[in-house]
Length: 349
Image 1 (cartoon, rainbow, N blue to C red):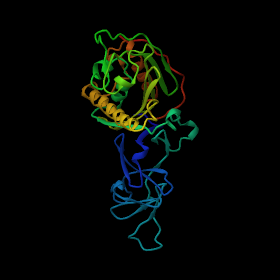
Image 2 (cartoon, helix red, strand yellow):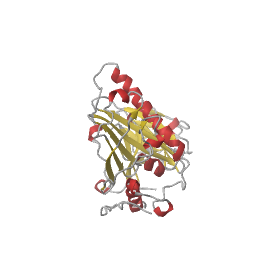
Image 3 (cartoon, rainbow, N blue to C red):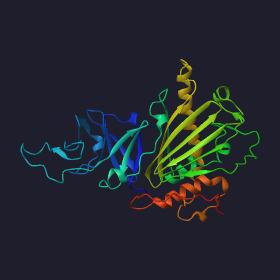
Image 4 (cartoon, rainbow, N blue to C red):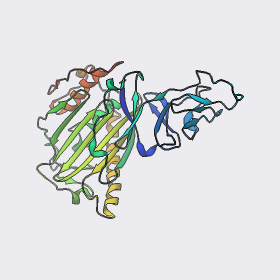
């Protein structure tokens, strides 16, 4: 749906010298690391008979097809056909597409679109400098949604559902029927949006009940969305902060794999307890997504109605969703060129 962007497509630690399959936007790719540890992304189907290269193996910098042994260089060019006699020219068509890759913040980013687009005209990878060298290694969460990725991303930046959906994973307000959200400002840039607003969770669940400062008047949550498939959230109680980058990998029209990278700024140096809290953080992340999945997969229409927002009744607390849909409407198409920043209306009736 969105071309000429850097898509976050995998967690860095999940890709090694064993080929890793990736299905993105209905198309199959294969990822692997070459002998220098660089991540390579190729189209998955062998140019010979269409076999999956993800079933093959890595030899040095090359990926060898499991069916007839054709070997592909990192640029996708076939360099060896075992069945041909020595000296036989390799056909020019014996190649697969190779795709630009970057590795940042514990994530692998793949450029999807026109490979001839100059690098200075490609939208940048969003900046998350705090994830470059965290005090403690990040934790990770993962969930497969039977939903379109526009719906999972909207869920991640929805400001008013948590106290209803996440009583199990996070906690609840003492007065859930009074969860008014004051008007808040959404900052919109060329390729992303951000918002921050106060939160109040009186009855925290699990370890957070003992670690975090409950009822802190300055407790707040920050949201961020960056085109095409990244959301960010930060929950802060006083001095304590938990941050997450969530990547929404659009497998196809009805399946989205959501993976998150989570860091925190507390209990990072306590032996034993820090390790235990790592596991708890990952478990809470998984539980939050499981709770969201129950509802998100039921939403109609399946794709968030960004072309005509009157299909749903959006209100003031949905300002982040309104801004998100405007960004989608602005950039959904065959090319991405810089445009003027857009304004955000407080509500749509």
